[in-house]
Each structure stands twice: as structure tokens, then as C-alpha cells.
Image (cartoon, rainbow, N blue to C red):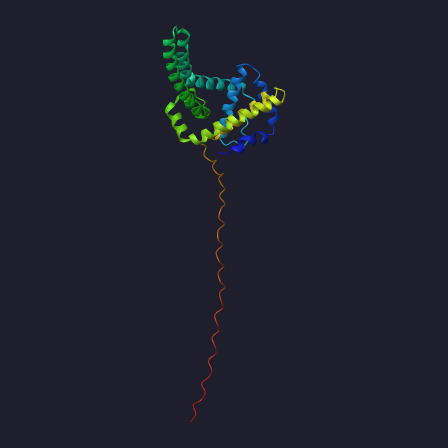
Amino acid sequence: MDIGKSFGYVFEDKKWIEKVLIGGLVSIIPILGHILLLGYFVELVRNVRQHQPEPLPEWDNWGEKLAEGVKLLIIMLVWSLPLIILFFVAFVPLFFATDSDSGTFLSIILFCFNCLLFLYAIVVALAAPSITIRFAETGELGAGFQIGDILAFTKEHVGQILLVVIVSWVVYMIAGLVGMLLCGIGLLFTMFWAGLVYYHMVGQIGLTPAPAPAQPETPLKPIPEPEAAPELPEPEAKPELPESPAEE
């Protein structure tokens, strides 16, 4: 995982100023704007998973971004539903406690439910990147509820996920402080940038390296056959010398 890339890739895009400005302005819109941002972040994760050289999405296809944002919101709400149920089961009875004994008993119950809330909140926080990845890869609502696959992916890459959670917490905190220093209005843009950093890191979780581009095959040049050696002329027959008369 290249954490440095997550911080710098935004500024490598030729239209990064325009895209960040639009993202910050979209975040002003209540509810609808945040759903659009979710759809934008889903597209960002998808681009990272596909090894796009410039993964920062364009601000187009607004209807598609809205639809994907709604789907991811539904998925996360369903995953968070047990937290909501546990909260009401734990806290509502406290309002109906009439005496100290029942209040003490309910306090013990409340403590137990708080432990369950805390544990389940950790599970959801660690599973959230895996949920986003699975949904971004398919675009299908059901992909966010493949619990076995999501938990297995989370367990396999828990080290990277913990790193993403910790780094993103620091990034959001710094972005909030910088945004406040920029007269408050800067929060719109610094927090959007923090989201871009977080979701780029999410897209890198468990990502295999991009395959090397195929090298074009260079045709082998045929080896020229050696030229045949020139035929040498046959040597001329030497004239026979006449036999000398035998000495008597």
C-alpha cells in the first residue's frame, strides 16, 4: 500500500482544483449532497481497483453517482441497524426506572449492552472498507451483504485496514483544524480532500500490482545462409615428360 500516493494523487490530476471545488460545494447540500459524495467516492475506489493512472473521477453522470450513493448508504444503514437496536434496548428502559433497585439493575444491563455496542462498532468500522470495496467492484446492492466474504476479506487484510483507519483518523483531524483556520469555510474543501485520501487508501487494500504491459513480440530475423564457396577450377594435368633413354 502506497500511503504517500493517497496524499499526492489528487494534485497530479490536471483538473484537481475544479474537482475539489465542486466536491466542496456539493457537500453544502444537505443529505442529497452527501449521497452524491458517497457515489463519487465509490467511483474513486473503483478507479483505484482498476489501476487507473488518474483515479480522481470527473463530476459527470450525476444520476449514476446518486444511485450508487443511495445503495452504499442503504448497505451501511443495514450494517448499523444492530447498533441502533442495541442502543434503544439499553437506554430506553432507564427512562422508566422508578426506584433505586431497578435503576441499579438497569445500570448493570446498560453496561453489558455498552460492551456489545462497542464490540459491534469495532466490527462495523473494520468491515466498512471491505464493504465499500465489494460494492465498488460490482455495483450490486447484494455485494454489501455477503457477510462471509466481507468478514474473510477483512480478516485477511486486517493489518492494512487498521493502518487505513488510523491514518484516516489523523487526516480528518488535521483537515478539520486547517479548515477552521481558513475561516471555517475551508472545512468544505479540506474535509472533502480528507475523504479523497481515505477512499484512495481503501481502494488499495488487498490490491494486487498492475500487470506489466505486454511487450510486442519482435520477429526474429532469419539467419542468412552462408554463401556457397566458389568452385575452384580443377588443376590442369601436368604434361607427361618423355622417358629418358636408359643408360646402357
